[in-house]
Length: 196
Image (cartoon, rainbow, N blue to C red):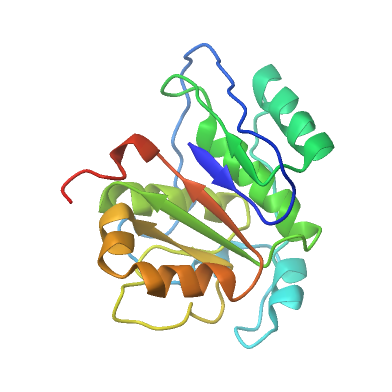
């Protein structure tokens, strides 16, 4: 997983962690339903027309119910100290890379260091998993935003897309990622060139 953030400098960092079971929980709602209105599960109500800053406060980022693993905490601390432009996280399957990335995203959104999160992953199935995991942490990511839709939809803090979609309309995604300060998470980046 590679995380590109605004500002900062420095080379990527590598983290390793032992594999462990990570339960996948979908908080209510229908799996596979790519609608954006999943925010209704949050404790506080949110008006869809709220500005992004108010939206972030209304749906305050939550952390996962489990404490961060030692490697996740160490990586977050290193990120906080260095504020790098790029940050590379490598760990075994189930080690908690998604939790790490979403915890970082929640912190950056809460501090208003970024206004948008874009996750790029290999498959549509992973798009839904990322959106559900983000939703559980109070981050609203649209898993159904297509290349046919221009701007990022109101009421979201970003979107989840695939490498194929980015390859199909690279300038569209570049415009979306640079219109506001954006955290870009590249999940399973070794799949970036698959099928091209």
